[in-house]
Image (tube, rainbow, N blue to C red; front, side, top):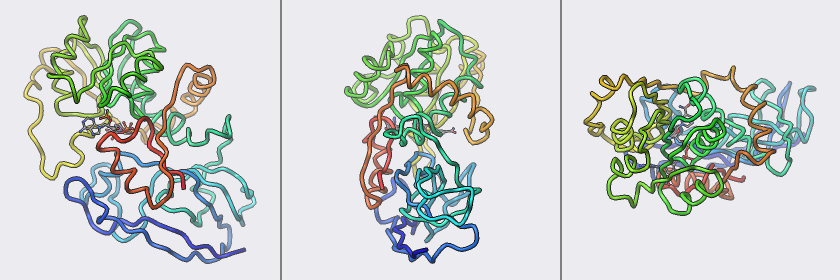
Length: 336
Ligand SMILES: NC(=O)c1ccc[n+]([C@@H]2O[C@H](COP(=O)([O-])OP(=O)(O)OC[C@H]3O[C@@H](n4cnc5c(N)ncnc54)[C@H](OP(=O)(O)O)[C@@H]3O)[C@@H](O)[C@H]2O)c1
């Protein structure tokens, strides 16, 4: 058994507004030899996700705040290097929640072995086959009452969650309208993912008008990832008895102070719209069914994935911050 030096990213101060590099510190930590049933893992890929911004707040809403001056955590995929747990072997590929570090000592109960169907694509288990893919699946099938022929509007449509929402809704026979922040993302959604209409919200003159033009029959389902102006436009265009899966509102995550919301919320009453917030971690029971559908969809080329891979743990903060300016095209991953 050996000792290892781990590179870890610690949160050292709580950001106000958009985080900066000064809120984080790369630290080297000496790991002792493993003992008892411990397992030494080397992370290969880690995920950066918008929800991590919420955990940087003192008053994190649905999850514990990251403690200051400790390594942060989140989804990662690693390889077992050494193990004293007989249920694991060196070389096992394991999903874990110990991101933001290259090496760590863990125990079997915090590691899930994965047997990737394609060994060249294990990062998919942080994206399309992982938490974001499951989020799309849960949101659509548990909270949207999706029916073939309906119109679905998806914000942050080219992102890790959004791209899966768009493609699953297409597979279920819906008409899909996406919004995203670049023409490159827009072309990919249309040409590769079969999305019917895409709005570049950064260049369109008026989002509500653009959405009205894209949805002459109105919108039946809105998959909400952004909030603010997107929610306002969706409410304006929704049909009676429309459903909104409130997945996230990334547009507000870096607001230092709350900002005024949409001014048309009364439409929820008049149109009898159902809005349901959800958190994917409450729906782990759907994971098996999700994988049983998603793996064949990927293998058959029915679901496409995009990834932006940043290399180096020292670039993880940069990758995370890039989520808030749309630097990612698809799932943002850090290769460690
Ligand atoms: N409820 C849950 O359990 C759950 C689980 C996972 C994710 N989520 C939520 O789902 C949403 C998408 O997450 P993701 O992991 O798929 O991230 P992502 O879409 O891969 O990355 C974030 C994207 O959001 C867009 N964006 C950033 N700031 C924006 C703004 N101010 N206005 C409009 N668009 C903006 C950017 O794309 P553009 O280039 O298009 O601007 C960026 O690429 C987030 O709100 C996240 O919190 C919720």
